[in-house]
Amino acid sequence: MSEHMKREAVARPLIFETGSPESRCVEAPTLDVPDVDLDAALGGNARAVAPRLPHVTEVEIARHYAHLASVNFGVDNGFYPLGSCTMKYNPRINEWACRLPGFAGAHPYQPAETVQGALGLIHGLQESLGEISGLPAVTLQPAAGAHGEHTALMMIRAYHVTNGDARKRVIIPDAGHGTNPATAAMCGYTVTQVPSNDRGGVDLAALEAALDTDVAALMLTNPNTLGLFDENIVEITRMVHEVGALAFCDGANLNAILGKARPGDMGFDAMHINLHKTFSTPHGGGGPGSGPVCVAEKLAEFLPGPIVAKDTDGSFMLATPARSIGRVKAFLGNFGVLVRAYAYIRALGAEGITEVSEQAVLSANYLKERLKGAFDIAYDRTCMHEFVISGERQRKQHGVRTLDMAKRLLDHGVHPPTVYFPLIVHEAMMIEPTETESLEVLDSFVDAMLLIAREVEEDPEMLHEAPYTTPVRRLDEAAAVKQPDLAWKPAE
Ligand SMILES: *Cc1c(COP(=O)(O)O)cnc(C)c1O
Image (cartoon, rainbow, N blue to C red; front, side, top):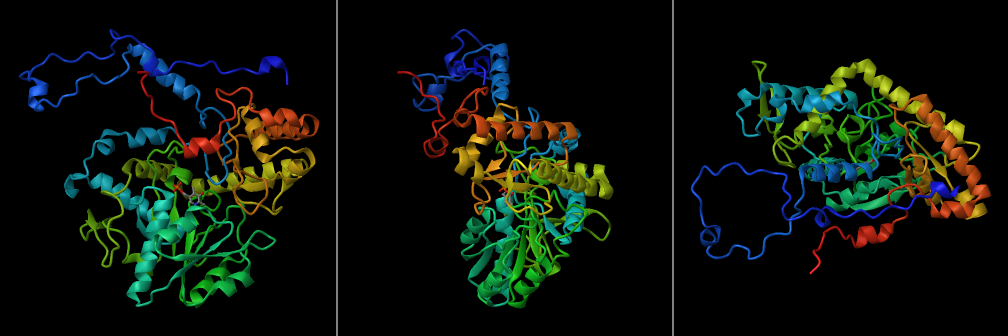
């Protein structure tokens, strides 16, 4: 690479290190209440030294946040094919919808008759998700995918306990998302892992061997984290039911099957859905999410309460199911996320959401076919919304790891795909383009990947140092997780 492309990041002072004691960007209003001696009011316990807050002007604070935004990578900056995460573009109009004063200003303690519109929206979303999943009873309370999994497994446990059946194990395929075994363990179950077969589906013989009347549930992602639809799904859920266990679908990512296939029809008894992946809430920054749980009739009485129900006169009310596992979140969940999802589903309609999945699957298959020669595809079948390539050949022949190639993509303005997941593929790179990218964007990603494939052969050393053009280069990711240094400490 040419020297001028290598830019070193210029250290920029922190907000705490800028400004001066005289600088202000707020003007306190004139005091219109009696002045008090704070220290006396606090019994002499007021702090002796003022807090070391930054003193900056309004434009300095504006620049501070604009700068932070500019050193971050988001879907507004470029292509973001982060497998399993569905980093699609979320229509701005849904942001407008959830900020409408009637929604944003509603108070959770308002009497039901004063928030009929909001309750009607929740009820409508419950019904839509019930229809999309084929599992008609729905709670919108859980705040994230993992939270939804946990809620569903608590309901499954309550179901078995009610039947006087204290089962101890949960079965999870080796392609499962890490939150699955964590959820099962948190619900007090031990986990039995079953391997995948050579087509990337569940190995039926291994499943058969793992199943007995001690199994409470199977937790399965379909399409799975290899981006593959399990061809034996109906047989799998039949086998699970045969021993009296229930089938749970990890539907965090529903982008591939909207309007095409319904987990309820595949024999699943419960599933969770991530509204912040498939249904139009931006995510990735740790902001509010939503992981609704949809269940079959036999689990409906265990749903967390309250849910929104329709009264005989057509008005909406709160109702708690007979054997509810209780509340899993304050009030009715992250309402703003629910508004976005509702607006998204209603705007697209049944045909529109079907097209979402058609386009997402088409985009993934297009990329897979175009990258196939230069990269090894882990399981080369028609994929769903994502696919996994293995960088094992590049590592063996040229000493370049998938991490190096992923980092190099940043120099092309592309967010790196998910790497080293799923665990069963060596040097995995999991690519999910989503439906919101144009053919031109997909082609420019292919160009970047093919260029990187050539660089692997011609200049492998250079790749070990990538990225070159980002605000920060290679970070010590283990230290960032294990010893985060996030708080500013004043110089003494
Ligand atoms: C994202 C994801 C989850 C977890 O969802 P969170 O909202 O991050 O808790 C679970 N399973 C799968 C398959 C996922 O992709």
